[in-house]
Length: 334
Image 1 (cartoon, rainbow, N blue to C red):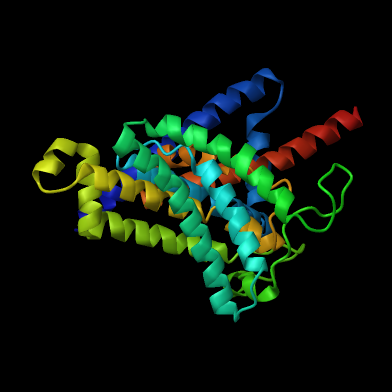
Image 2: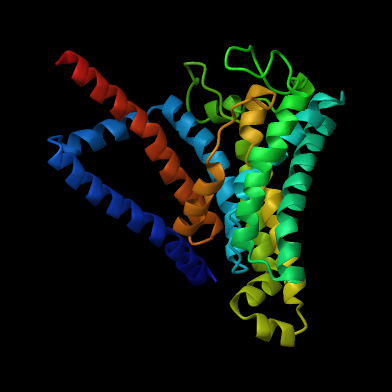
């Protein structure tokens, strides 16, 4: 058992590590061509990442990427390409923000309601693509791309105009977005937990409590996939639908179930921003759904692999800022 676990971990880490090594090699060549010293550049990035405040930024950035990666990975395990995570999480984000702003409940119930609404909306919207696939034979890539456009350019654009508060929808307006959620509906930061094993977190950095939600999602994903009958049926249907049907598993039912489950996880991707701002802004963070696809592929759809992929993406994203600042300073000095 121990050998099998180590083998799975090694396979999960192989792709992210290989991709990182390739990226380092390619980046080194580009840096050398541009006249920069790769060792100095990587030294600056590592030094920046060694700071506790930077690590908080990396974990905050990795959290939605991990959730997005798991959402995509669930579809991949069923040989489904759910490219609609982008639209699913943004639609879930705005509806959960609106519902959360309209109720007054005890903290536990308030937060639970927001999370539940986000998962239901994401799962329902993704499930549409699954239903269209099994009833009309529409490829999920085509349907989810179309549903992305409908969500982002249609439904959300209309809802933000209907539910906006704090100013008119214009370039010069004030804070435009949904009504703010009461404090009881927001998760507090978990700085205190991290400071138990580190030091005081400075510079106003706050580690989002959605990080714990992401860990729970990863654990549940592993258990569901590897320790339940549903997970076995999902993997069997993804590998060989004909053999699974012969074994009594309905491939159509598994397609819809997988898309709903994938969308439910996608609905959580917007939670870090929602819990940070307390409302749906007029210009929310976008692109997380598409980045999650790369994270899932990099992590070979494994919970551990996806986590490593998300951390690599987050590290590169956060560290690129320090390099840009230094490059700007060099240009100004010349």
